[in-house]
Length: 288
Image (cartoon, rainbow, N blue to C red; front, side):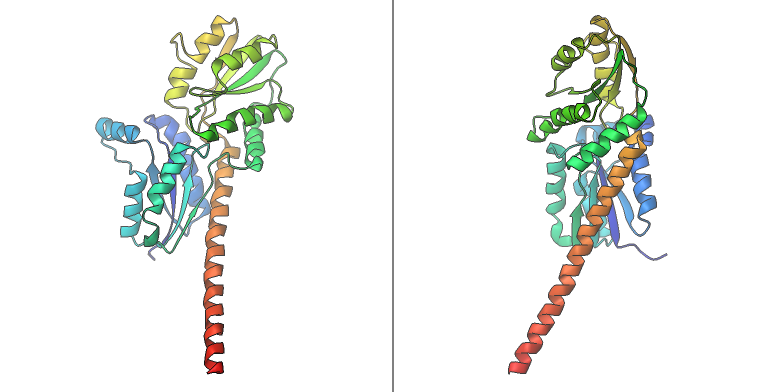
């Protein structure tokens, strides 16, 4: 079998919940592998806490980005595409790039695919993918999506996306975050004004992991479910990560394709430089 020298490194935050990983991260990686058979697929996670937990609990070793890069170098990979499954261009994505670029000189070509929400086209495509999963919202119910949130300036995308839902006609869809803005209090005020009876809660995260299980749907008094129930709503929880949505996985595939084009463009530039250099050399020779 011919050894592959091109690779796609799929970088995820990670999860310690095997069942949701199989439905989300594993599916994204499998889709990429099927679409790019000439590439070797590698995995890396950015959460060192989750990596340590899996090793301690299950004896499963998932590499960090730096470890995966070293493995690819040892395997003779020369052309690399790095595709994150991150939702936004936040802290995890910045650190991922730093880890890869430290060893940039070990590869002939490196290109980064974009996180899920990078362009306005991405925002619209994600909204359509989400609403394909919830096509029949009734007049007296709303869909409330739970994002993670971050102190990074990229957190602004959550408020922008919440507005875009409404701008596209989904007036009863709300996007909040666990750790930033839009906050739970902001959601309560907006939803209260509509006089609704029933709420569907769903994670706006790639995996329906710890936040979805505890912060969104848990029985603890501070969970979103409990808080909304105290407000008098009937609450239904949809435990399905974004990675389970076919439309979302398709966006990641398109981002890999765009990154591949960057590498092909880079290759074309290198070839052009080589031709131009040759022509310059011939001109010098003729002049002499």
